[in-house]
Amino acid sequence: MTEPGTRDTAAPESPTSTPDRRPWRVHDLAASDPEGELADRSGLDETAEREIDDLMAALVALRRAEEELSSASRAFMDLGATDMRALHYLIAAAHTGELATPGALGEHLGISSGATTKLLDRLARGGHITRGHHPADRRAVTIAVSPATRRAAMDSMGRQQAGRVRAAARLSSEERGTVTRFLLDMAGELSPAGLDWAEGSARSAGAPHAR
Image 1: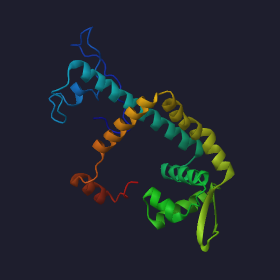
Image 2: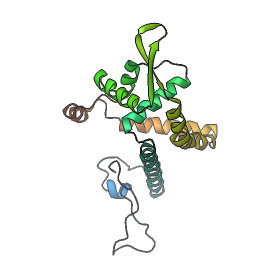
Image 3: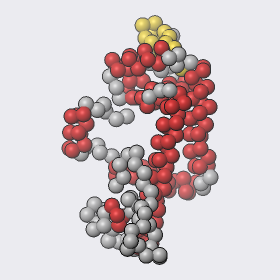
């Protein structure tokens, strides 16, 4: 099991390594769960275990690329992670014709109304957003991303994120279905929802409900 932000690369060969034995990686089954305490793999042969190891390595490579892209984008935009998530939501809302409100944004981010106000004040001071009146309710506020910020976001992280579409387009319809089922199945397996230890940790840390 790899902690977020760590490099899951091949480990250097030990003095006992043999020429026909590949270097181990920390996420490999033999390294992370050698006795099968966490996952029953009694029905897996050596080939299946190696295929799973390679699949886990591919997921690690994807996560690393996403982390590096996110970090580079935040540095380019000079914004924090929550600010970037807020801008992403606001841009997507505009693309779908939805009028974004502070309440909807706060719900999406899983933060309080007070924290949402502070975030919007910070983005407004930086010239990233503008506030306006809702056409159906003059008491309500709408939020829009400034043209310059939208352009910068689309030209940087947006163009890179489009690589997801290019990769998915190269798959056949059947392959896309298989990958979708796998990712949803893995998301369900990894979800901490309903686990006492996870909910207790979130409460003690004061973490907001994940969205």
